[in-house]
Length: 364
Image (cartoon, rainbow, N blue to C red; front, side, top):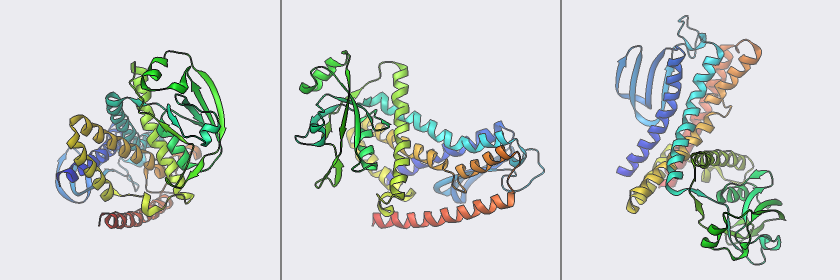
């Protein structure tokens, strides 16, 4: 039970970060905030300071920053809709941006602990597409088709999102690569590599039920050698989460993944977070910190990017209307915009109910 509470707490922190972004930029732009709350449903406790009520509500899956004049005309000069369009854009965008910043902080914790996993080949399966294309152990992949490869995870993600597609693989080769082992690769890092390109088509593997190149990667983690490299590795972790989210959505729309197997709601997420935290605490404080940071990175980056999608009722949908206003020089009819967001909210609530039942089904 304590680990489930830990999952709820982590989820609540991520929501708090998101809503605090809206809250902070509303205050910076002189917009009145009626209520800043964590959670949904009835209030558990609250207090009023200045013009704003601060509340904690009973359901920890959400939060809100209710601003003056946000959904209706209001003569108050501090009303949301009376502020310049750029001020309103900054307020709406601040929530997702704060999530991405928090994801970057979590990524820094991970990179500081374990470093960055390099896309260095450890072994080549005899007779596989990679072997026929001339790849060797010790080669470092740099690009597959039009996608930059920065870690071994990029390779797995690309193959999963583009099953069976022909690949143009760019890679670096160090001298003596065919004899690569951990120590040899480390010694070769100072040598100037040669650039190579290979053409291959992954083959379907019945055992793993996926298309594979026929390669395996070694646990080759590299620690950052300077602050810029540390920042680069940390930014990559956030980028990977964003690309994973976008690729996952694409796979859902293409029918490559089943919705009931791949979509998880707050209940399922909290359960998974709690289970991994429970397992991680058995391995010591360092592993536990890494697990919490990994979940923080994944959830915060996903929440940030999903909220930027141009879907009515989400931040991205509201930004879309504000950008239209910016281009037209005048706002969209508030009634029409309100109807669109109301319809979007109704659909999102229906989706949340379906996801909730799916989560409960998986847990039973």
